[in-house]
Length: 311
Length: 257
Image (cartoon, rainbow over all chains, first blue to last red; front, side, top):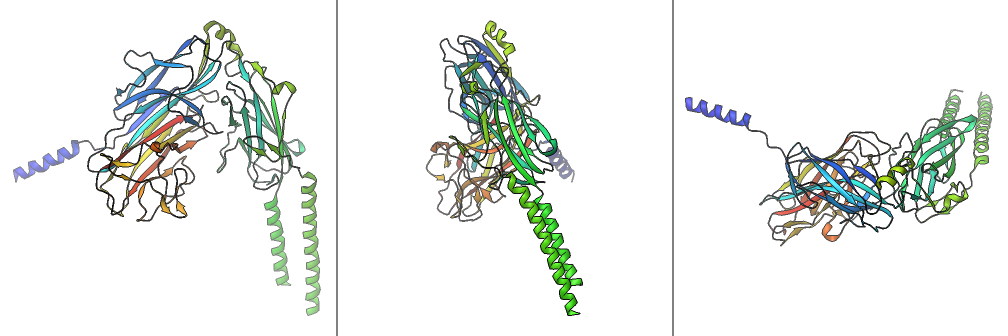
């Protein structure tokens, strides 16, 4: 009996003390998420990144690859390697690029990234991503399993320039309200999505500034500030305005909401910094309380119908 | 009595017609004078049906070399003296939240597969991106689920087939126990809209076949922590050779620019 009680206590203690088996997890953070640099050929800069591991201990590898815009909404497509004249290396004494290293839980590693532009490098923009990727473990024998490899990125936008002067060649390629109908007619109570797409035809990135203005009947007026997001060289980007818009199906620059009645005119005035060209676009729409009118008609019809019944 | 009722009815009909006519007239008057004639404009990427787009002045279309405000005219002196200008972060965000990506379970165990009995396991993807503006997470497999000696593989799923044939970019229903393969479902925040419910699956993009990694989470709006669950599923036939099948899924979390 005594042995049995000791055995039970032993099992209970073991069960309580033994930590629960949790799935192996990975959690990485990398900052800053974006670096913009204008560098003269022959010069180098040093950027300090912070890579933190909040998950289980892991083996990480740091590398740099090129990227290009994937779409008009700010997403990127990573390439397999770094292209262009810009050279990257780590100034850390014990780390080099493409060399695995171990990072414990709750530990962070400073990455001293040297970005060097060789003499004679052609002027223009070069876009890269600094990647920190985990090394997947080997799966268990006897079961079917999938190992997850996590990669986190931070983007680096490098402008190579001899003088610090950059080329600004913007164009508005789309500015219109999104209507389900052929005509730009909306119900007064509907949300009205607006799209402003700017193309950068130059060889350097540009940042839009300015506003979208709404003008209606009886002096109705509203201004919406353009959000300053980078538009990379030779690409297009949806330019958003505050309050930033989240539209259910289709991305939009701005979603107008409220009560609208009659004709409205929208205009976009966008510039790209001091002394830069201002580009302009306009569009219009018409709003009427169709649903309210339909409800009124329906009410009248119902009243007539019941009146007929009564009399 | 019948005559009186007929007279009332005629009066009501007349009134009703008048009301409808008035409303229609008002409607037509409001709509037609404001009809906006569409001007078709084409570019390589878009067809603009009805927009008025102008460049403000002549020099706007010429090649102008000027300092961008992003890099700053105020930094012109700095550039000439140091040879570089560096900016970190986003102009429109003032957040100290770092860009963080987490996977709750990196060893997805599908166990011992039984023919015609789908096996599943899940992992949770979490993205904190307060300081990154917007983000995307892509996923791709390094190859099909294969035995360690590479003698056999489990093909990527086509879902139920026929009208429900899924692709790497289009999820479809996968409920049939005789539809074999390996694929995934997504639920939660910022997932592709084609994952309508938990029966919708896609195969992973196969890097061995040079297929492009597919976006599994993305958001164009600034936010804090976004969480989604990925369900992995494998189903094999009676003739699937025995063995331990394995692969690696590469998840890449990228902030915007």
